[in-house]
Length: 304
Length: 285
Image (cartoon, rainbow over all chains, first blue to last red):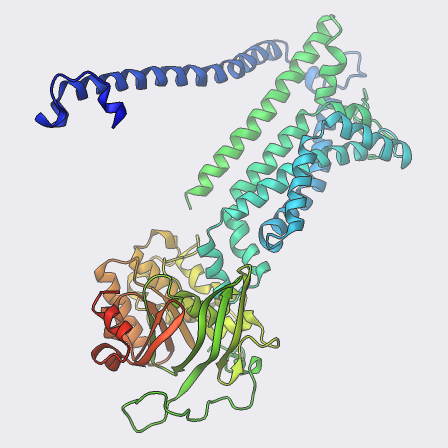
């Protein structure tokens, strides 16, 4: 009552139908103006998010691609005419290895959390642990993995030590997105499967995973993107190498794209600048592609 | 053509006393034959934590009849029907006392496998819940997980047979490979009935199967229930009294977890014993 009463009204509101009462109309106009202002503000903020990304992509696409050449992509850094092949192969190797470790553990862990833990107190603790793990600075994980795998296990700087460090970083993302995606499967569908005589495992395999797949894949792609973008833990575990990996996954340092940026940004020779710019562009491209694929996959799947 | 030991489902139950002795007549059945009882609830109570949602229920469910559980929201009728195939086992804090005897075997006994029980006691839910897959795969879901059939043609004929029993075959025979989510609500519900029938249950539990459907689809589902009665024991939950009166053989009226009244449908509707039942039927509860 009180709020309506302090607007200055020329006539009592019930003397006219409300829709053409001057005070109601004035109030409506004021609200409309506020609405428009808010709309403009929100749009501006949204654009501000887009600007850095667009700027980044444009700048590194132009500068990275202006000098692109066959040797730059297919030679390694030890070559007199240096290129990024060792870093590209190294990043691919590390991504494959770390995914091979993190995806099964993350997905199975997520399945446990969503379907088998029955919401007990252990599941709360596990979820908390995963969240903390996701928040641990990656350089700390790198140092710990260095102490354990590189030094204590005598693996040396190696793809395996690096892949384990990366998989620890990837794990919480896959774990949590799998759990969330599975929890989004409607209870009515799960009960339908149980009522037909499915065991929990059958239900998960034939129904829940299928339904939750887009969410799980999105989580995996995000985790892969994060692992491709990591630098700090790799400096401690993979070190860096000028040569292509030979397939040995222990006692052999590995190169990676982020390492190129880290190693070469401080030099000013044209070739070093080229290498850094191209590595940056390739990383941006990979992360962008992972996101686009995740989106497209999601969209086509949801059409079922 | 279905080969595996479907008839041997009684293995999971006690081989002895597979059929209830003619029970002492709980109500006037109106006929000379003794009751052919398939499920018997004895002092059955159910709890969510400390909340008692079903109180000392004693009830007989006859073979190849439609037994209706009726009552206002929250009376426990859905809980009751979900205990008949142990669908509430996973609900945290849910527990039961007393017995539910299916052909004399307590289904809550430790030696009963709740997964196998569900092949004897199928269920259709309130909201149609087809899986996000093709119509064919929906019906084939149960037979596939239980490996009922040896080859594709056996599966095909089981799928067809189930869809025919659910009066859906003619409408979907040309689009079996299409997504089940493209069907109308009423078709989806009949698909869910077909899917339940494909597991070859003896009992079909239907938890308000028509409450989300339009009147035309509702009457189709009701006709279907009456047809199914020839081969299956149907337990229907509804808050729709007209529906209960149209299809029910016997009617149980539940109120706040108590079984207030139980008897042949005509008796309950025309001559209710309890004033509560009478109030409910007149719409005053």
